[in-house]
Image (cartoon, rainbow over all chains, first blue to last red; front, top):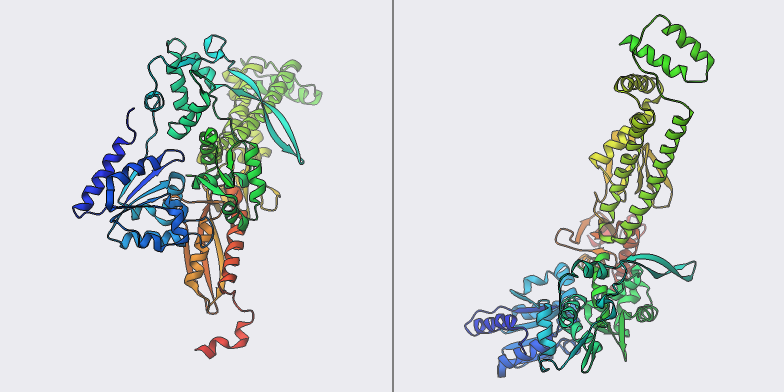
Length: 329
Length: 302
């Protein structure tokens, strides 16, 4: 199995070596949700050895002293975006952390949610606190293939094409019902939809590709190169020893502004509990319970116990929708 | 040339049912020879011309509907798409007029010149205002002092540009009134465009506090209220700015921030103001005292 994050590990190693030589460059590792940055931090922790202290940002909230008194000269703080909350007074802990980090003589290696990073960069000028920023890159089809099937023998898995790939091509134009509310009633409105997948398959039908190639190209496209999403979709498709092509493009999202704002808050944190969502939405006179219920109904979020996170299947669609509305930058 | 024009009048009037008009023109043209062919304006040509205009009207409605619908689908490029609406309208009507003159009425170059003379005379006598408005519309579309979707102030009226028509520009005011301003008048007025084609727009929010309140904390709170609003848009070129100004008996804390969709201008202002005041009250920041001039408190402190 090809090791992920080789390039990023190289950059982090260089920052650590420079630190021991007397040049301190605090590091920000920025990624979309589900990118597996904790796996990267495992390796950084191993690299730091006895001089490293690994802290979850959530623990800083309850006890800032835990950070100040952390042993070791290399401090690894995970999910630093959890130190802010999008309301008045919600930046105090994060600002305190940034100021402490700037005045410290220790090396800080931190991970951030990319959506929060971009927001905080505009609000607090976050980039000025970190001289080095590492963005985890998207994975291509071949890298995803290496990541997912390197543990299997050649020929062990059978890739089963979906019916439409075997000749019965899907129509370019078809009808789809979208839900609209009119005078308090939910209506199914039929709209014509152009099937991009069909156009793409017609344009590339002369190229003979194996079902495996087709599957991984599709997986890379639908997951948008996000390894966590790709892994999730792989688990859904794997029916050992068969790999069923059940991949579908995420549906288009039709949400109101308030629901979209709540979704942007969940996306920017990765996951939140209902109380935390309510803390942000309440000053805006929005009901967290109602919105979370509505988002779950549309399968945009996933609720496990009290923890709400964006559904991996919907991540690409959610980011596209919120980007169009300019709720995330 | 005079003969040609006279003959054109004669031919035009010959095809009209008005006996009086025919009589006059016949007497004028009786001694003048001409080589302008007869105009083909009969009832079928007239019906065709009307049909072309009706089709142009329907086509305009359909194009406007499709562009408006698609502009809402590509949310981030809404105003760019809407820019095409007036262009499309002028193009469709322009093509319709060209088609009527060229294909339906089948005017030759000479007839077209004669017709232009007639049109010129008509404009000079009675239609000059209408033509000035249409020309004004064309100038607005080409020069783009504003576009459909922009928020503008024209002649003291503030609102969102809903339509740039052939004759007038229509605005929708914040209280949902439809205001029509002649295109000709727009060009001669001082015009303020709040967003100049961008979807985001700067909103200025003023809060007034008592001089003895903590102004630094008030600025921090207003800033946080603006950057945490669900309507805000921030980028390097669209920063949030907080300003403080001292007046004799109160202070003004001003936020300049961008709303991501100009249609939410007032919701943004209300959201920031409401949450900032809740925090002001919680932190003991007070509004200016009513009647502060009479209490004399300020002079005692001096």
